[in-house]
Length: 265
Ligand SMILES: C[S@@+](CC[C@H](N)C(=O)[O-])C[C@H]1O[C@@H](n2cnc3c(N)ncnc32)[C@H](O)[C@@H]1O
Image 1 (cartoon, rainbow, N blue to C red):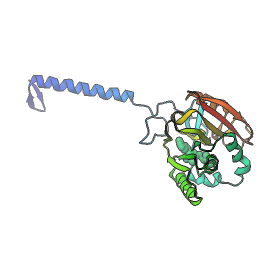
Image 2 (cartoon, helix red, strand yellow):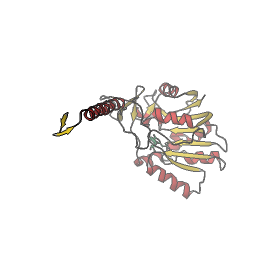
Image 3 (cartoon, helix red, strand yellow):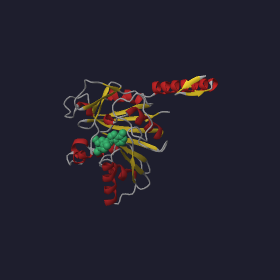
Image 4 (tube, protein in one colour):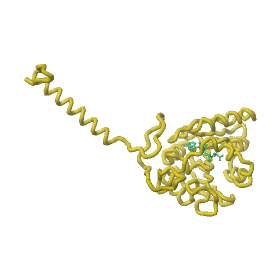
């Protein structure tokens, strides 16, 4: 007979209790080992758990997050305080939005996602292009941006823009439902680029395209912080990793590349 806490327990029952406790302990150790390691920003509660593709470095650009993906430092997300900058009148000359829209080769009736739409600088131009038979899915992770989009759409009677709240890992786009995804000055600040771009690829129709507009990292004269720039080579490497092939690069804007990728499978 075994004595537990001064009470007498029959030997067979004591053996069952000991074996059960040993199994419970082994289970706990196993799940602790399998737990993903989160480096840097934590995913939002509703998001799938990202894997440990992201590296944290102590030595990094003071304007960056210290989190790296495929050798590139991820930038901080621009807050809603940046709306005035996004809406600045000189942007028309600096970024030539009509040139970007033309490069996209859109048709009336297309379904386009403006991923990281911000205050809607491109969203409403896209809405005019795809017309009443088309639709623009304006995705952002910040409520202030989505509220600004809603107010501007309502004030201008625009009915073909749908605001979507994304998470850091998932833009919540409909699978196989989008002709083209535009990302202007966004990709370099995605906290989980691999997860987001995998969802983007899944959201594209066959031969659907992703159009990036990013400041040229190759050109040191471009007066933008280094972590807010992207090189074509790096972008191409990161898109290849999620199954997107580069089809065209346009260097017609003063400071940015327009880089176009396509879903091939
Ligand atoms: C620099 S602003 C650019 C806004 C807009 N594309 C423009 O050109 O005016 C970047 C925007 O991307 C959004 N953003 C950052 N990470 C995102 C993510 N994972 N999913 C969706 N939006 C994101 C930010 O909230 C911000 O509104």
